[in-house]
Amino acid sequence: MENREFFYRRLHSLLGVVPIGIFLIQHLVVNHFAVYGPESFNKAAHFMHDLPFRIVLEIFIIFLPIIFHAVLGVYIVFVAKNNVSRYGFFRNWMFYLQRITGIITLVFIVWHVWETRVQIGMGTKELDYSLMENILANPVIFWFYVIGVVSTTFHFANGLWSFLVSWGITVTPRSQKIATYATLLVFLAVTYIGIRALFAFV
Amino acid sequence: MAEEKLTLIVTRQDSPDSAPYEETFKVNYRKNMNIISALMETQRNPVNANGESVAPVQWESNCLEEVCGACSMVINGEPRQACSTLVDKLEQPIRVAPMSTFPVVRDLVVDRSRMFDSLKKVKAWIPIDGTHDLGPGPRMPEKKRQWAYELSKCMTCGVCLEACPNVNSKSDFIGPAPLSQVRLFNSHPTGEMNKSERLEALMEDGGLAGCGNSQNCVQVCPKGIPLTTSIAALNRDTNIQSFKNFFGSDNAH
Ligand code: HEM
Ligand code: SF4
Ligand code: FES
Image (cartoon, rainbow over all chains, first blue to last red; front, side, top):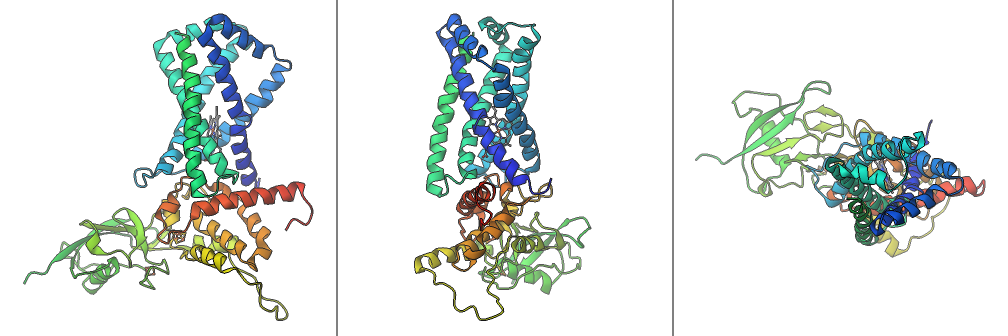
């Protein structure tokens, strides 16, 4: 349709933070209960699993937003002609990494959802600590998960920075610079939570 | 006495559709030469390094003081103005090529029409014509004038489009320069009266939403225009405008 680009791009930006970014943090924090032992993880996971209207929540807070963000995201990746070798500025690298981590994150999410949510839905697997324990017992898969999590948290944190620009919140160079440091802290914090949870399963 | 020579490797193209090729020239060196004067040597003596007579190299230039933007080209990998680029400050051999974002007309001459079309698209002017004398417009505070003057320095040279990863043949993004001009004209006391029209033009396909914040533009602009500040400010303005259009009144100008 004509002249929908502005609306779609703003929606893409918004969805990256609300709900997808919020969900990401929630998901990693729930996983982090694994650090306190299998029972603790199972309790947290089952609390989420038993939320009322779970299917509706999953569809509208997780699946549809991620599908929209991912489809438009792949298109945005395709449209750029990256030039970091010629213009090696910091923000140009972040621009490039945002696109690379978008693609890695897509591959990771598809794999991860297939291995967990789809299998649980089909009744071939049970949602509990041992499901993840078995998956992460394979060292190749474990490191794939590490890369996937770091890629996702980077994409989220750096996306938060450009979200602030897209919505006209950080306008001056100074505010954008401070946002760079702030989102770096977000990246470190969220990555720590995510990776610590992974190591709790091995 | 053997004259000092300068090696110039020019990326040439005979016509808009023919294939580009490189040609080397040995140019007589003089002190304080700029790229334009080096190119003029190739015109005076159109013989390449192999001693063959060739068609003289074509390029565009006008002001020769970095205000018209016509002589922009890629010099040793960097898009910049040939008139303000001094040979003594460059590594040799010197490579000059046309900017890749624009269609090549011939040799170093590119067609920058897309930028001028974009300026029309976003209404980068101030309508002052009426059926009667409209009188003097409102005055502009001096401090604001000084600030706006910086934005008005844009010479549509195209360097920012050349450096932008989102301006290419796959995208219809108009690029940083025309965006920043909207901020210039929207901040003018008379231009402000047509603010919403310009913002709405920016919200069309190929407009502001094409920016992905690589921020190369602000790094390469020879005029030091705060392009990324303009873009972020316009993000804010267009968001407010779109909310006004959707939720607000039927008179959201
Ligand atoms: C957990 C999943 C994801 C989260 C939390 C997330 C979050 C975000 C956020 C917050 C932004 C910033 C929006 C803005 O620029 O204003 C963003 C941008 C982006 N995302 Fe994602 N995203 C996710 C998955 C993906 C996937 C699967 C892709 C597909 C390849 C993708 C591609 C992109 C691209 C290309 C941008 C840059 C948009 C631009 O610069 O204009 N994202 N993402
Ligand atoms: S904004 Fe700067 S780089 Fe871009 S066209 Fe204008 S003068 Fe050239
Ligand atoms: S001739 Fe005008 S900018 Fe170089």
